Image (cartoon, rainbow, N blue to C red; front, side, top):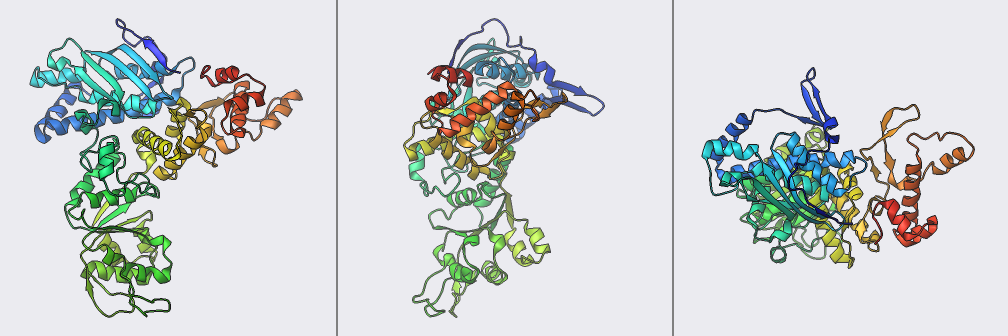
Length: 580
């Protein structure tokens, strides 16, 4: 339910002292902690020196982008912290207000709220705030004086990162007035990124430079239609993709841009499902070979005895069943890019022939004696440690060095949590359109779960969970935790509970078996015994019963309410959603 009409024009957002208890100074350990995040105290003048050197060495635009992304990372981290705190008695607006409070605690200036209008479930957000005494503007003015453009770059990144992390979708803030322009205070306005328009210039500062022209948080509809492979749903993101703002993602993009203009072989490293093929397709699309074919081969899907025929082709009569001459993948990719996925599982014979193809740039079809010259750029990918495979004798050392010319590590999703809200919104739209469903967005609990989950399957797993959520939540209009985590995923929520001996312990739940032990606990209570399970409470019992009923009715809240002997409004009250 939307939170409306919060307006504070005279008082800073500093009345709530709950956040103060999460700051710890540990001088003996040399650490300062905010929640579980390590913090630093630095001189404002030192930041001013860094800012000046960046502007004068890499230019104002590049410096602005770097500081914006740094702020986005900081804001997203604080957003994740607020999700984990879940302080009782606060609604969504109160939680979002913790962002400005954290900003003030970290010494960036005084934040005053003009207006906040938001609904996490539908993704609606409108926010306007004032900054007084901005440390960033102060540093800029000391060096450059009053100028014509806004200068609170890192703070804008922080606001965008914090609210995006909390809302579960990309929210972009703009500074419409700035002390650095001579205004009395800075004024910022935030709303969903796409609502600013496709040509919004500030979007460019959230990524290290586009992998493709026109990419920002999400590629525009016009641009998507002009790109190849936009219908390839087998790729975690498709060629249009979603550009992230995390440091690891931008580092990989920077390397990709550097090598794209060359002819060097590229080796993509990273876990399964992290998006290595997306990077390979992007490499091809921004290279000089973009007008030629991109051919992808999953080496793990080809039987050992057919690998050579698939890669190098076969002459008619080479073996039983070879009734015609067939070109291999190298020939089909002539002039373009050949992507060899799961390269680490190739057998030794195929490895030797691949080495010759890379070294000599020539191949021979199976059963043929003619040498065929090739002009193909090879990109390979693996989730194995090829150095260890070499040490174990399972991969040729000379082939490894031939492939490892320019390695690019694609970061795992758990190392780029800042990008999760972008992926969530992208896949929500994709699967609503694909399946003809109407789902507005995600509950706050669902966003918290997505940020808390460890993502062993990376982006591919995230995509599957969102598709599952869209299908399960089509009747409820919003995706909750029980709509997505129904396939045995172990979700370790960052919550604390009390053990029987009174100690605080992490509360861990396997959502696919959340009702296990519930019957035993009820029997023990009915018999006048204390439940043996740690963290048992009436609230947790009610929550498990509601989740179980929702799961049994495929998310139908009316049916779940009848099953529990409640009215629909009583169920919504217990879910904290209010009557609809």
